[in-house]
Image (cartoon, rainbow, N blue to C red; front, side, top):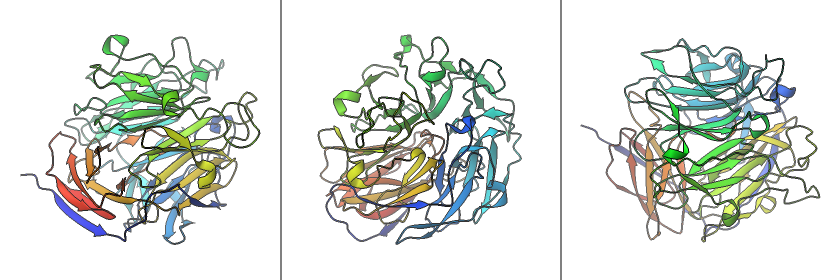
Length: 502
């Protein structure tokens, strides 16, 4: 029989929601550097590796060694560099946290220019190489996602490999394949090559249709497209296949850099935000189409963010990492976009501040980054939007190219909130693929959140899911587990940390 255990931890009430505000400082000991192979990448993984519930940060360094930063103080928020030897790697593009061997300790998938690494967490922020037969070869890895397929004890891994550095005609028109590692028992064998590859920079396994099976969405860099290049969605069948217009898939071509996914409408299906050079794209899911059909809502919802909103540089913006999150706890998800020129591209803005799009009750978004204090002019790349000091407000860490990493502590007034941690025993301990439903009392919609690994730009986070609640003082919560079984509804007070274990 399946049972769910519940743990509540109550914190002090917060004020009513208002405009977001962050206190900014740098982490001067770390920057993402390197030559043309590090023009892209620069991700950060956020996860708790020492069991104190406060997330640590593992930041890519490019030609610098990657760095693990321990979360050492809550008020003010502080991090201290403390990198174990096995993580002090060079050539790191980014990293994603997940529990690969389901032992309850978070592991790391590390993307590199060179051989990718799967690192096993051994406790207290120590790591060692896995012995799982995984051999990535010498690639330029820029995208990652993972899912647990039915009957497997290990996750299926997908890695985007950008361009073929060994091609003498490169880098233009030399897009490399996406590699998929499906486990065979307790080991990984040779990867499946998903072709054609169109220079993937971000990918995300997501159960877009709510069927219990996650398919693989891939965002591709149009700058290197070969003929016919576009965004992709792979159906995870016995032999993966691309969705086509006959399935309802609409051709979409952008300079794709990052993916974020979130149910904005309350219909239970996730919409998609895509970063690019130029417009940042919001696509809403058409649940009535009977297939993977997404409609462009960029202009009607105000999410273009296509040019710098402060300063004198009017050239197009370059977006990288994207993340949804309710930064003022008003019950409406907002969007953060890390921005910055690739290097010295003359057709794109050099002074390109980060974007914070705050959602209004009518579903439109407005730029608030300058007032919030996060409109950095550094060449930003990867980011983590997460409650780093456990005060019920989402904080922000941003990796910059050739500039110090930045840390933003959320100090703004906000509405009520709820933190939901979901776990299960034995296989897939973090319940990747589960959906959390949170229905705040008195609200006109429920929040539906899929637990995923992947997306963003070269980095992701693992930990409790944060929900803004606005004025609601209680909420009903339930979990649809990866196998589609459903937990009972439980009622939680606001401003609490709820843990649901299957």
